[in-house]
Length: 355
Picture 1 (cartoon, rainbow, N blue to C red):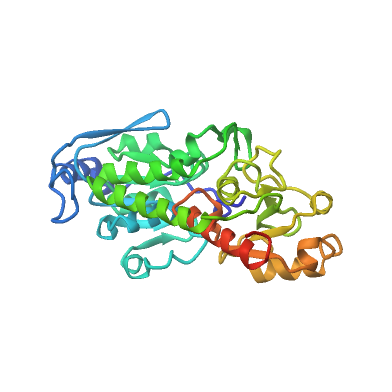
Picture 2: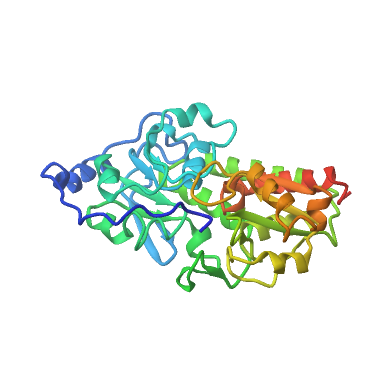
C-alpha cells in the first residue's frame, strides 16, 4: 500500500498506568492555558476559543490553541512546520521521505515517535492535546487508534479532508477510491483548517497564497496536451500505479497532460506490467522513496527494474529514458503536491515533451 508502511505485529490491549489515566485531567489543564507568545497571530492568545472545525462528518472542538499536537503522518507534520508551529509538535510518525527542503531546522526539534505507526500507548505518553493524521487508515481501525479512542481521553482528533472527504471512499479496500477528482483546493483546505485550530489564520492564508503562486509560475505557458504519464509509487512485482483522481491526477490536470490510467478511480490500484505495456506511456513519473517496506522503493531501484525486466525494458518511456522523479509525499495529497506540479512541469519541458 503506497501511503503507509506495513503495520506492526498486533499489539496487546492497552494497559494504562495510573499516571496515564490522569491524561484527561492534564489535557483539560492544557486546554485552559494561553498560547505561547507569537503563536496566535490572528485571534490573540486565547481569543475566539472554543472553536469547532467540521472534519469529514466529525466536529473537532478545541478549547484553546493546541500546545502538544501529535502528527501521525509526514504530510500533516510538514503543514504544521510550514505554519511555524514546530514548538507545538510533541511528536510525529509515519514518514516516507526526508523532510521538505527549508524545514530541516524546524523538524530537527520534533520528536520522531516511529518511522511507521507508533503504538497508541506511545502517543499517549506524549500527553497530546490534539492529534492529526493524513489518512483514515492511520487514525482509524487497524491504525494507531480510532478518533473515538482519543476523544474518550479528551484529545480532539483531525484527519486530512483530502482523505476522508473529496468524494473519497476508504471502505472500498486498498487505498480507497474517489468519485470525484482531488483538487489542490482540498489540500489548501487542510492548511486553513490547521491554521484555524492553532489561531494562526493569517499564516495559513499567506501559505496558501504562496502555494497558488508557485503553481501558476510552474504551469504558465505550459502545453503538454497529448502527453501520457504513468505514476509509479512502489512495488516491482505488483506495482502501485496512480488512478485518475488522487494527487497525481491533480498534478496531471495542472500541467495539462493525460494519466495513462485515467479510467481507474481506485487511488493506487495494482496493475500488471502487461497492461502498462499496452498503454505505453510517454513518460513515467517515479516515486523516489527512502522507506524500505516494498520492492523497488528508491528511484534508482525502479529504473534498474524498468531497464532490465523483459516486460518493461521496451516501453517507449524506458527506451527514451523519460523519467520524472518525485518524492512519495508529492504523490500523496499533501503540501508537497505543489512540489509535484513544479517537478512534473519542469520534467516535461526538460524531456522536450512540452513547450
